[in-house]
Image (cartoon, rainbow, N blue to C red; front, side):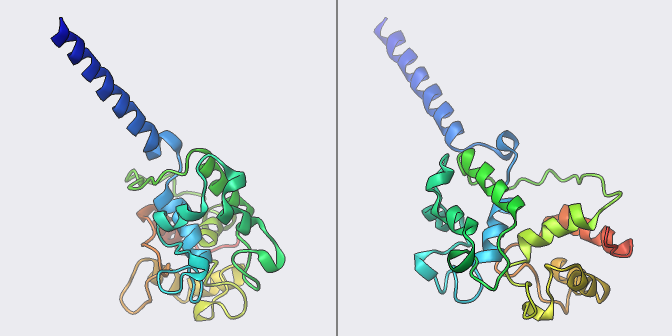
Length: 220
């Protein structure tokens, strides 16, 4: 009788631990947001340029190129107490990234808020291996969001990296026409791998850019 009692307690403990662990570490399928490919690139692109929040400079003590570094300024389930998000929402002298850089887009702010509200988990290895439909690709709804997430921190304004301002269609079109955009994101020989300080774009995102350029890189 005592043995059965202790075995039952052990099973309850194991189940409770397992359930708790799952809640602390939800999968991409459960929350629908991938830290590795959706959240981290926003911070890397906008915050880790030279002199800012990278492993070398660590401005204000932050290295925003890793999950651990980002979580020093993020409060899971609490948008209001997440300092990094508040800085991103600021405008003027207190905004992040600082002027004259473009502010983080409202779409990316909303995505970070949703991620925080879902516990700010470190979801990774999220790509399913199959892409959404690659027909009717639009610059406004497909290409621009990729560039805002991965490229804006370096390639914005007249002094953008490599001379390209990817916040404007004219700069995107120029880099698409001369092969720089595709060569860089594909890591082709002779091109500087992009995005800088971050990992390679997912296969689906590269294929989306590839298809759009093959269709003439229209402003649609």
